[in-house]
Length: 208
Image (cartoon, rainbow, N blue to C red; front, top):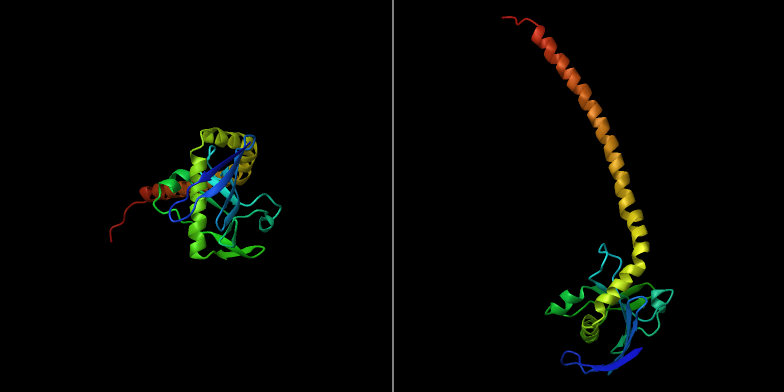
């Protein structure tokens, strides 16, 4: 289901028209926007690459899905400049901040980019701020986050074991072996010290 609305941007920017589509199976929201010198698609998903089982951050992707990032169709075009990449942020912190300006980039090649001009950066940030505010005020926001968390839980659990738990367990085993070696050395040193004390105790003292 597509929800269409006209959204006000922070002054001095004009309002934009939004077509909003939710995917209840994945928790993703697609925002297509169009306004004066501004048009494109931004996808908002819960950021699932962190350590939190239930994420608080979101990942904004510029453009529709493609095999390679630089091939994404419908990337946002602001003031004639095409944005690349995306943004990861905590919506609550971002919306509460007095500064909503982000660090947006344009491509210089398939895998390289530079910052966009300041005017484009401010306008693009204003559009993103409006979309994040829309996402954050959705009545089903928590349900979408939970859906995404559940859907990816098994994969994230496997990745957590592979990238964090298993290496730490291996390191613990290595440290336990190292500790046993040190304890054996300590036992031998203690015995040598005991023997030394016993020999010195039994040796009569001599007077110069």
